[in-house]
Length: 490
Image 1 (spheres, rainbow, N blue to C red):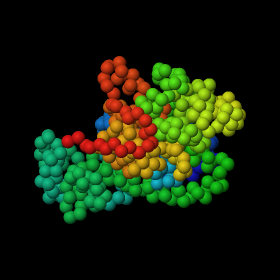
Image 2: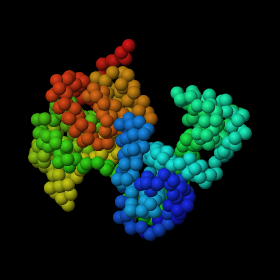
Image 3: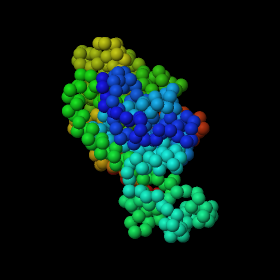
């Protein structure tokens, strides 16, 4: 297929690095122009997935609380693992094509655009950090931003104020001459670097901000963010028309990219890091209380209360139970027992047993289905009478608050979780719930309900061995409202 992106990896950015070394293959690009070449669908998908691994890796690194230098190291490790080719030219080609492919996948909703922009900006920032001052200035000039290099006579007029700003941020004392020798200075309109102005890291005079070359990152990242945001809107408008023409070939592939989970499949408990691979029906009540994520404990308790779940709920919970190690025989016994008040054995066999066996790869095309990832659950669209989906994404604030209160979380923790939900950080909200329930940090982030479960079992096991009490969990249905109130400790 032909994919329009001419010149994306030639000319419209830095083409060589003074610093040399392997990092010179990963130079910042502003992606002014889309590539134009024939590319097989298989490579189209592979390049996109490799870049997606980098962006999701950046997200995980930030969630783990890495410092800036540690984050830079993590980003370039990811780039070397997933984006590096034999030559710098081939690496830049991969960088350009993969970026534009993911534009197609992440242009379609505000939520997807927000995620893509944030992590592409993080990647751009880290690439920009490692290039030389001359390369930064060169890239700046290509953007035609309102930025003027400060001449020495103008610096002389401002040197007292510039030095005062420098000393307010650095413990090391230097002279005016050393400040001039240390860095080039630039003059830009204050509205182009709102972050630096808000943090009082720059000197402002008559609507102009005076930057050191090392502070140009904020200016370029802001420009990159604004341009990428505009381009994604334009891409979304064109994609709707193009997708209709490509609905048999390209459109399904592109639509699937933003839902890809790139971690372990959690297929029937076989990739569970040494944890017990077998779970029985008798284990489920205690496991649901101790270690199910909210999306699964909600389904489990609704099933217990109603003795029925719609298809979406059965799929979400059933595949999760398969992933934690519930075998087919026990799965059939579990669902049959839960449906028993409403369906006799013959009705169960006709209505439900086939689908359960199908999920385990024993019927139909023998495909062995894997549990749903967080992204698949978050992007699902449950109806009003459905119980599946992500509680952080799909429940009202009042319902979610009630569910969290049942977990014995204090009001301060619940407030923090709800703040993350309001900002659409649903997986961060789930991670904070994990930390509140288990009384310890979750350094890996939460990307999959089965990952939540495995991490919970690991923590519970360690706490049991150490004899340290785990945070108490309210036994019962985390989906029911509770009258219990909590006050923030003084």
